[in-house]
Length: 249
Ligand code: NAD
Ligand code: ZN
Image (cartoon, rainbow, N blue to C red; front, side, top):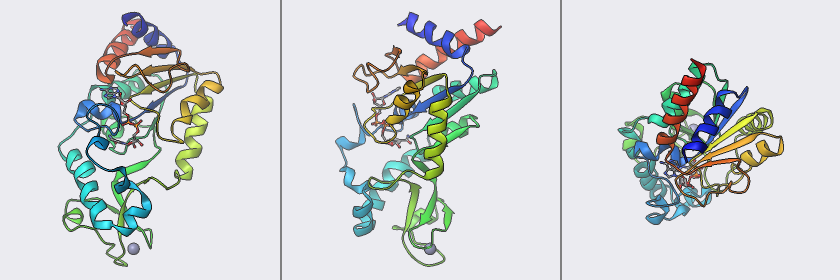
């Protein structure tokens, strides 16, 4: 494994346009549960709570679960070594675009400045009728389901549910990043969520080197990745960043 890490460090350290594609696994070491895989949320909950039609017909049931799953878990959680290592790549001069499927805002909190939120964010709520946006404060989430102050309609988190399309801006920017990068680092994703899982495939099609980090060997990019590091994101990225810094100094 150490040789895979050394190879990855060399390629990333010399990249001109790095794209990083992250999934729930990168936040697992922050204590945020993933959806799939060991200990994943779908072992305990029915994914229908995140289906858009179910949400509209059962807003309270959905919101009770959403609050527990996303807002209560996030309250005390912080970015981890993996998020900080990616932010550090930028500070040492490696042009980095992060495309994240996550909705936890951790890349930005860790200091990354170029982040595309493919699935939106938990930070804000959006009115299902007048589309006004409000911050997801504790006060607003204390009375479920939350309602719009302006038109009293149902508020929904500003992340996409099953059955909704990807925000156009995020989609366009991600496609461009995938087409333009010379290296794509894929971290902590099962690749089961479409169309997000097409992003590394698009990067590969345009000639990028694909490096994947996941502790589970059965990852989606197997066969498509050029380097596979079978490890937790934090452990692998700490070693990678140290090697890059040594090579650059
Ligand atoms: P997923 O839950 O389908 O898969 C998680 C992947 O992470 C698995 O392949 C697992 O092996 C891997 N993993 C577990 N621990 C890891 C670690 N320490 N380091 C690296 N990898 C690790 O996640 P997904 O592919 O991102 O798709 C799920 C969807 O759920 C996404 O759309 C995302 O928006 C959403 N989600 C987000 C969060 C979050 O914002 N933190 C949390 C749960 C789900
Ligand atoms: Zn409204």
